[in-house]
Image (cartoon, rainbow, N blue to C red; front, side, top):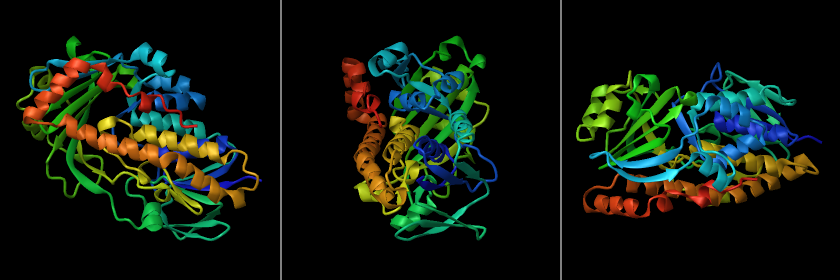
Length: 396
Protein backbone atom coordinates (compact mmCIF):
# COMPACT_ATOMS: atom_id res chain seq x y z
CA UNK A 1 0.00 0.00 0.00
CA UNK A 2 1.16 3.54 -0.78
CA UNK A 3 0.54 6.55 1.44
CA UNK A 4 -0.88 9.52 -0.40
CA UNK A 5 0.14 12.94 0.96
CA UNK A 6 -1.33 16.35 0.26
CA UNK A 7 1.17 19.21 0.57
CA UNK A 8 0.12 22.84 0.86
CA UNK A 9 2.74 25.27 -0.48
CA UNK A 10 5.22 25.53 -3.31
CA UNK A 11 8.36 26.95 -1.71
CA UNK A 12 11.58 25.35 -0.53
CA UNK A 13 9.99 23.49 2.39
CA UNK A 14 7.06 22.17 0.36
CA UNK A 15 9.25 20.90 -2.49
CA UNK A 16 11.70 19.33 -0.03
CA UNK A 17 8.80 17.58 1.71
CA UNK A 18 7.47 16.33 -1.62
CA UNK A 19 10.88 14.98 -2.63
CA UNK A 20 11.45 13.26 0.72
CA UNK A 21 7.98 11.71 0.64
CA UNK A 22 8.45 10.39 -2.89
CA UNK A 23 11.82 8.95 -1.94
CA UNK A 24 10.07 7.19 0.95
CA UNK A 25 7.66 5.53 -1.48
CA UNK A 26 4.66 7.82 -1.02
CA UNK A 27 2.59 9.54 -3.69
CA UNK A 28 2.18 13.29 -3.41
CA UNK A 29 -0.10 16.05 -4.58
CA UNK A 30 1.36 19.52 -4.03
CA UNK A 31 -0.79 22.65 -4.22
CA UNK A 32 0.80 26.04 -4.92
CA UNK A 33 -1.42 29.13 -5.01
CA UNK A 34 0.72 31.07 -7.50
CA UNK A 35 0.32 30.59 -11.24
CA UNK A 36 4.01 29.69 -11.60
CA UNK A 37 6.69 28.31 -9.33
CA UNK A 38 9.00 31.02 -8.02
CA UNK A 39 10.90 31.95 -4.88
CA UNK A 40 11.05 35.42 -3.37
CA UNK A 41 13.93 36.93 -1.43
CA UNK A 42 17.60 36.89 -2.30
CA UNK A 43 20.44 34.89 -0.75
CA UNK A 44 20.53 32.21 1.90
CA UNK A 45 23.15 30.27 3.80
CA UNK A 46 23.20 26.48 4.18
CA UNK A 47 25.35 25.01 6.91
CA UNK A 48 26.69 21.44 6.75
CA UNK A 49 23.55 20.22 8.54
CA UNK A 50 21.60 21.21 5.41
CA UNK A 51 24.06 20.52 2.58
CA UNK A 52 24.55 16.93 3.75
CA UNK A 53 20.80 16.39 3.22
CA UNK A 54 21.03 17.64 -0.35
CA UNK A 55 24.01 15.37 -0.92
CA UNK A 56 22.12 12.38 0.52
CA UNK A 57 19.30 13.12 -1.93
CA UNK A 58 21.75 13.02 -4.82
CA UNK A 59 21.71 16.80 -5.34
CA UNK A 60 25.32 17.57 -4.43
CA UNK A 61 26.39 18.18 -8.03
CA UNK A 62 23.42 20.47 -8.62
CA UNK A 63 24.37 22.45 -5.52
CA UNK A 64 27.99 22.68 -6.68
CA UNK A 65 26.78 24.20 -9.96
CA UNK A 66 24.99 27.19 -8.43
CA UNK A 67 26.39 27.81 -4.94
CA UNK A 68 29.42 29.59 -3.55
CA UNK A 69 31.46 27.95 -0.81
CA UNK A 70 32.92 30.67 1.44
CA UNK A 71 36.32 30.21 2.99
CA UNK A 72 35.38 31.83 6.29
CA UNK A 73 32.88 33.81 8.34
CA UNK A 74 34.36 37.10 9.51
CA UNK A 75 32.79 39.32 12.19
CA UNK A 76 33.75 43.00 12.13
CA UNK A 77 32.87 46.21 13.90
CA UNK A 78 30.57 48.23 11.66
CA UNK A 79 32.02 51.51 12.99
CA UNK A 80 35.73 50.86 12.66
CA UNK A 81 35.71 47.94 10.21
CA UNK A 82 38.11 46.15 12.54
CA UNK A 83 38.03 42.36 12.46
CA UNK A 84 36.70 40.88 15.69
CA UNK A 85 36.73 37.14 14.95
CA UNK A 86 36.72 34.58 12.15
CA UNK A 87 35.57 31.01 11.66
CA UNK A 88 37.32 29.01 8.93
CA UNK A 89 34.96 27.28 6.51
CA UNK A 90 35.82 25.83 3.09
CA UNK A 91 37.61 22.50 3.36
CA UNK A 92 37.91 22.88 7.11
CA UNK A 93 34.12 22.80 7.41
CA UNK A 94 34.06 19.65 5.27
CA UNK A 95 36.70 18.05 7.48
CA UNK A 96 34.87 18.99 10.69
CA UNK A 97 31.34 18.12 9.62
CA UNK A 98 31.54 15.98 6.50
CA UNK A 99 29.72 18.49 4.31
CA UNK A 100 30.36 22.05 3.04
CA UNK A 101 29.04 25.43 4.12
CA UNK A 102 27.29 26.98 1.09
CA UNK A 103 25.73 30.31 0.12
CA UNK A 104 23.32 30.60 -2.78
CA UNK A 105 20.34 32.43 -4.19
CA UNK A 106 16.98 31.25 -2.89
CA UNK A 107 15.73 30.78 -6.44
CA UNK A 108 18.63 28.45 -7.21
CA UNK A 109 17.84 26.16 -4.27
CA UNK A 110 14.17 26.25 -5.20
CA UNK A 111 15.04 25.30 -8.79
CA UNK A 112 17.23 22.38 -7.65
CA UNK A 113 14.38 20.95 -5.58
CA UNK A 114 11.75 21.55 -8.27
CA UNK A 115 13.87 19.80 -10.90
CA UNK A 116 14.32 16.86 -8.52
CA UNK A 117 10.59 16.56 -7.72
CA UNK A 118 9.11 16.92 -11.20
CA UNK A 119 10.27 13.54 -12.59
CA UNK A 120 9.34 11.62 -9.44
CA UNK A 121 6.81 8.85 -10.01
CA UNK A 122 3.76 9.63 -7.93
CA UNK A 123 4.35 13.41 -7.72
CA UNK A 124 1.66 15.73 -9.06
CA UNK A 125 2.23 19.49 -8.79
CA UNK A 126 -0.76 21.83 -9.06
CA UNK A 127 -0.34 25.56 -9.77
CA UNK A 128 -2.97 28.23 -9.20
CA UNK A 129 -4.41 26.12 -6.37
CA UNK A 130 -4.90 28.22 -3.24
CA UNK A 131 -5.72 26.28 -0.08
CA UNK A 132 -9.00 27.43 1.50
CA UNK A 133 -9.24 24.86 4.29
CA UNK A 134 -9.44 21.18 5.09
CA UNK A 135 -11.68 18.56 6.64
CA UNK A 136 -10.12 15.75 8.65
CA UNK A 137 -11.78 12.42 9.35
CA UNK A 138 -10.53 9.31 11.12
CA UNK A 139 -9.44 7.81 7.81
CA UNK A 140 -8.48 10.72 5.51
CA UNK A 141 -8.03 14.45 4.92
CA UNK A 142 -10.03 16.40 2.37
CA UNK A 143 -8.34 19.57 1.11
CA UNK A 144 -10.60 22.41 -0.01
CA UNK A 145 -9.22 24.73 -2.68
CA UNK A 146 -10.09 28.32 -3.42
CA UNK A 147 -11.69 27.50 -6.77
CA UNK A 148 -14.12 25.07 -5.13
CA UNK A 149 -12.27 21.90 -6.08
CA UNK A 150 -11.27 19.27 -3.53
CA UNK A 151 -8.51 16.71 -3.10
CA UNK A 152 -8.35 13.77 -0.71
CA UNK A 153 -5.32 12.10 0.84
CA UNK A 154 -4.13 10.13 3.83
CA UNK A 155 -2.45 13.17 5.43
CA UNK A 156 -1.89 16.88 4.91
CA UNK A 157 1.47 18.61 5.28
CA UNK A 158 1.20 22.37 5.82
CA UNK A 159 4.35 23.77 4.24
CA UNK A 160 2.66 27.01 3.20
CA UNK A 161 5.02 29.43 4.89
CA UNK A 162 4.82 32.22 7.43
CA UNK A 163 1.16 33.00 6.76
CA UNK A 164 0.09 29.35 6.68
CA UNK A 165 -3.58 28.71 6.02
CA UNK A 166 -3.17 25.15 7.28
CA UNK A 167 -1.70 26.33 10.58
CA UNK A 168 -4.43 28.92 11.00
CA UNK A 169 -7.10 26.24 10.88
CA UNK A 170 -5.18 23.51 12.70
CA UNK A 171 -3.90 25.58 15.65
CA UNK A 172 -5.91 28.83 15.56
CA UNK A 173 -3.02 30.56 17.35
CA UNK A 174 -3.05 33.87 15.47
CA UNK A 175 -0.69 35.39 12.96
CA UNK A 176 3.07 35.73 13.11
CA UNK A 177 4.06 39.07 14.61
CA UNK A 178 6.57 41.76 13.54
CA UNK A 179 9.84 41.56 15.45
CA UNK A 180 10.59 45.28 15.22
CA UNK A 181 13.28 44.86 12.55
CA UNK A 182 13.41 46.03 8.96
CA UNK A 183 15.66 44.17 6.53
CA UNK A 184 16.99 45.85 3.38
CA UNK A 185 18.50 43.58 0.77
CA UNK A 186 20.22 43.92 -2.58
CA UNK A 187 22.33 41.96 -5.05
CA UNK A 188 25.55 43.46 -6.44
CA UNK A 189 27.70 42.17 -9.30
CA UNK A 190 30.96 41.21 -7.61
CA UNK A 191 32.94 42.11 -10.73
CA UNK A 192 31.90 45.73 -10.18
CA UNK A 193 33.35 45.85 -6.67
CA UNK A 194 36.91 46.69 -5.62
CA UNK A 195 39.08 43.62 -5.02
CA UNK A 196 39.04 44.23 -1.27
CA UNK A 197 35.25 43.78 -1.23
CA UNK A 198 35.24 40.59 -3.31
CA UNK A 199 36.58 38.15 -0.74
CA UNK A 200 35.04 34.68 -0.75
CA UNK A 201 33.61 34.94 2.73
CA UNK A 202 30.53 35.64 4.82
CA UNK A 203 31.09 39.11 6.29
CA UNK A 204 29.09 40.25 9.30
CA UNK A 205 29.38 43.85 10.49
CA UNK A 206 28.03 44.36 14.03
CA UNK A 207 26.67 47.77 15.01
CA UNK A 208 24.42 49.45 17.55
CA UNK A 209 20.84 48.22 16.96
CA UNK A 210 21.75 47.03 13.48
CA UNK A 211 24.02 44.68 11.57
CA UNK A 212 24.99 43.93 7.97
CA UNK A 213 25.66 40.59 6.28
CA UNK A 214 27.30 40.03 2.88
CA UNK A 215 28.20 36.83 1.05
CA UNK A 216 28.58 35.55 -2.53
CA UNK A 217 25.78 33.78 -4.43
CA UNK A 218 25.25 32.48 -7.98
CA UNK A 219 28.59 30.69 -7.90
CA UNK A 220 30.28 33.90 -6.78
CA UNK A 221 28.98 36.15 -9.54
CA UNK A 222 26.78 38.20 -7.21
CA UNK A 223 27.13 39.54 -3.68
CA UNK A 224 24.07 39.29 -1.45
CA UNK A 225 23.96 42.27 0.92
CA UNK A 226 21.47 42.57 3.80
CA UNK A 227 21.11 45.47 6.23
CA UNK A 228 18.94 44.75 9.28
CA UNK A 229 17.84 47.72 11.39
CA UNK A 230 16.19 47.39 14.78
CA UNK A 231 13.43 49.67 16.00
CA UNK A 232 12.24 50.82 12.58
CA UNK A 233 8.53 51.14 11.86
CA UNK A 234 7.31 47.91 10.31
CA UNK A 235 3.53 48.18 10.12
CA UNK A 236 1.97 47.23 6.83
CA UNK A 237 4.98 45.41 5.35
CA UNK A 238 3.86 41.79 5.01
CA UNK A 239 5.63 40.97 1.75
CA UNK A 240 9.26 40.26 0.99
CA UNK A 241 9.84 42.87 -1.68
CA UNK A 242 8.27 46.12 -0.56
CA UNK A 243 10.42 48.74 -2.29
CA UNK A 244 12.81 50.45 0.11
CA UNK A 245 14.64 53.72 -0.40
CA UNK A 246 18.42 53.87 -0.74
CA UNK A 247 18.26 56.98 1.45
CA UNK A 248 17.04 54.85 4.35
CA UNK A 249 20.06 52.58 4.06
CA UNK A 250 22.47 55.51 3.77
CA UNK A 251 20.98 57.00 6.92
CA UNK A 252 21.24 53.70 8.80
CA UNK A 253 24.91 53.32 7.83
CA UNK A 254 25.89 56.97 8.26
CA UNK A 255 28.29 56.24 11.15
CA UNK A 256 29.71 53.04 9.73
CA UNK A 257 33.15 52.37 8.26
CA UNK A 258 34.12 53.35 4.72
CA UNK A 259 34.14 49.84 3.18
CA UNK A 260 30.64 49.19 4.43
CA UNK A 261 29.35 52.47 3.03
CA UNK A 262 31.14 51.70 -0.26
CA UNK A 263 29.22 48.43 -0.47
CA UNK A 264 25.92 50.18 0.11
CA UNK A 265 26.73 52.81 -2.51
CA UNK A 266 27.38 50.07 -5.08
CA UNK A 267 23.86 48.66 -4.71
CA UNK A 268 21.76 49.17 -7.87
CA UNK A 269 18.50 49.07 -5.90
CA UNK A 270 17.06 47.96 -2.58
CA UNK A 271 14.10 45.90 -1.45
CA UNK A 272 12.91 45.73 2.13
CA UNK A 273 10.72 43.58 4.31
CA UNK A 274 9.53 43.50 7.89
CA UNK A 275 10.80 40.55 9.92
CA UNK A 276 8.11 38.45 11.57
CA UNK A 277 8.29 35.34 13.71
CA UNK A 278 6.57 33.30 16.39
CA UNK A 279 7.62 32.16 19.85
CA UNK A 280 9.73 28.97 19.84
CA UNK A 281 7.78 25.75 19.43
CA UNK A 282 6.39 24.68 22.81
CA UNK A 283 5.67 21.03 22.10
CA UNK A 284 5.17 18.31 19.51
CA UNK A 285 1.45 19.10 19.27
CA UNK A 286 2.32 22.41 17.60
CA UNK A 287 3.92 20.51 14.71
CA UNK A 288 1.56 17.56 14.22
CA UNK A 289 -1.76 16.17 15.34
CA UNK A 290 -3.89 13.46 13.78
CA UNK A 291 -3.38 13.52 10.01
CA UNK A 292 -2.09 17.12 9.88
CA UNK A 293 1.56 18.16 10.19
CA UNK A 294 3.39 21.46 9.77
CA UNK A 295 6.82 21.95 8.25
CA UNK A 296 9.30 24.81 7.75
CA UNK A 297 8.11 28.37 8.34
CA UNK A 298 4.53 27.19 8.85
CA UNK A 299 5.77 25.28 11.91
CA UNK A 300 8.63 27.39 13.28
CA UNK A 301 9.31 30.73 11.58
CA UNK A 302 12.54 32.19 12.90
CA UNK A 303 14.60 35.33 12.78
CA UNK A 304 17.51 35.21 10.31
CA UNK A 305 20.26 35.79 12.90
CA UNK A 306 21.43 32.17 12.78
CA UNK A 307 20.89 31.75 9.00
CA UNK A 308 18.93 28.52 9.51
CA UNK A 309 15.44 29.08 8.10
CA UNK A 310 15.94 27.08 4.90
CA UNK A 311 18.12 24.53 6.68
CA UNK A 312 15.38 23.77 9.21
CA UNK A 313 12.88 23.17 6.41
CA UNK A 314 15.31 20.70 4.80
CA UNK A 315 15.86 18.99 8.15
CA UNK A 316 12.09 18.75 8.66
CA UNK A 317 11.66 17.19 5.23
CA UNK A 318 14.43 14.65 5.84
CA UNK A 319 12.89 13.65 9.18
CA UNK A 320 9.45 13.38 7.57
CA UNK A 321 10.80 11.14 4.84
CA UNK A 322 12.41 8.90 7.44
CA UNK A 323 9.19 8.26 9.39
CA UNK A 324 7.24 7.62 6.17
CA UNK A 325 9.43 4.72 5.08
CA UNK A 326 8.04 1.21 5.19
CA UNK A 327 4.70 1.93 6.88
CA UNK A 328 2.90 -1.43 7.18
CA UNK A 329 -0.52 0.18 6.70
CA UNK A 330 -0.21 3.82 5.57
CA UNK A 331 -3.84 4.71 6.25
CA UNK A 332 -3.72 3.29 9.76
CA UNK A 333 -0.12 4.21 10.69
CA UNK A 334 0.23 7.73 9.28
CA UNK A 335 -1.00 9.63 12.39
CA UNK A 336 1.56 7.82 14.56
CA UNK A 337 4.28 8.50 11.98
CA UNK A 338 3.47 12.21 11.93
CA UNK A 339 3.52 12.29 15.73
CA UNK A 340 6.94 10.64 15.63
CA UNK A 341 8.11 13.29 13.15
CA UNK A 342 6.94 16.09 15.45
CA UNK A 343 8.56 14.50 18.50
CA UNK A 344 11.86 14.28 16.64
CA UNK A 345 11.75 17.87 15.41
CA UNK A 346 10.09 20.25 17.87
CA UNK A 347 12.89 20.59 20.43
CA UNK A 348 15.53 21.05 17.75
CA UNK A 349 13.43 23.69 15.99
CA UNK A 350 12.67 25.48 19.27
CA UNK A 351 16.37 25.60 20.15
CA UNK A 352 17.27 27.13 16.81
CA UNK A 353 14.44 29.67 17.10
CA UNK A 354 15.58 30.69 20.59
CA UNK A 355 19.24 30.90 19.58
CA UNK A 356 18.30 33.02 16.56
CA UNK A 357 16.54 35.50 18.85
CA UNK A 358 19.51 35.56 21.21
CA UNK A 359 21.95 36.16 18.35
CA UNK A 360 19.88 39.16 17.26
CA UNK A 361 20.24 40.67 20.71
CA UNK A 362 24.00 40.05 20.70
CA UNK A 363 24.47 41.43 17.19
CA UNK A 364 22.70 44.69 18.07
CA UNK A 365 24.22 45.45 21.48
CA UNK A 366 25.11 49.05 22.32
CA UNK A 367 27.16 50.84 24.97
CA UNK A 368 29.30 48.86 27.48
CA UNK A 369 27.64 45.58 26.53
CA UNK A 370 28.75 46.05 22.94
CA UNK A 371 32.34 46.62 24.08
CA UNK A 372 32.18 43.48 26.19
CA UNK A 373 30.91 41.48 23.24
CA UNK A 374 33.75 42.71 21.05
CA UNK A 375 36.35 41.81 23.69
CA UNK A 376 34.89 38.30 23.97
CA UNK A 377 34.94 37.83 20.21
CA UNK A 378 38.55 38.96 19.93
CA UNK A 379 39.56 36.65 22.78
CA UNK A 380 37.63 33.51 21.88
CA UNK A 381 37.06 33.89 18.14
CA UNK A 382 36.12 30.67 16.41
CA UNK A 383 35.22 28.96 19.69
CA UNK A 384 32.24 31.29 19.99
CA UNK A 385 31.30 31.16 16.32
CA UNK A 386 31.54 27.43 15.69
CA UNK A 387 28.37 25.51 16.57
CA UNK A 388 28.89 21.73 16.54
CA UNK A 389 25.42 21.10 17.98
CA UNK A 390 23.96 22.90 14.93
CA UNK A 391 26.23 21.96 12.05
CA UNK A 392 26.92 18.39 13.16
CA UNK A 393 23.25 17.43 13.40
CA UNK A 394 21.96 14.63 11.17
CA UNK A 395 18.23 14.93 10.58
CA UNK A 396 17.66 11.30 9.66
